[in-house]
Image (cartoon, rainbow, N blue to C red):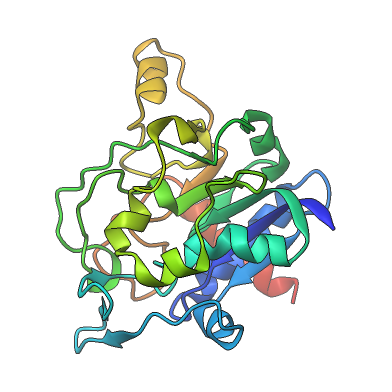
Length: 255
């Protein structure tokens, strides 16, 4: 049993992004960290996930439960994180992120911001992208609390965690907006753990710090517009591209 574990959403179209996320979190961790993958195929085998979806001609997905488009294979399964963590014997906190993360500091430090009175901790981005298309031609949906679910630190002792039935039956909007929770059930983390290159800062706290010429450090980067892999379309260069590329090279050399 462990008190903390880290779960990464898997999209089989992004193996290099996943490789960088796993390699960078281990490189900066001050002590061993349990790193686990959330794959929809595995979760279907375990009878934890049964949402049907279809792949459209343009490579996007449509969920057949609510009829809405989504862009990554872990769009819904991410909300199974606390359920899977408990089955894995994790007792206190479980962190989820998308697979396109680059860690630049010790993941264990995020627990210094954990609030046991909350069900989930997120970075409260005010994310309102202008474009309707994101990386590789995927649909850029707009909704309340967008980007909050890309990083979620779940309090496994809360009695308001999502259930298997909820994850499989509720609409994507219900899940991604945390509609089953009261506002005071949601705690806020520093934007340092979820920096969006070419877009951050967006949170009130980070913007206020920058206005006072006290910019916050960047401890983890989310390449939501796509990492610098060859052939990735609809992305702009970022100041963190070389860090990502170097991490990928190191990960391949370590194999």
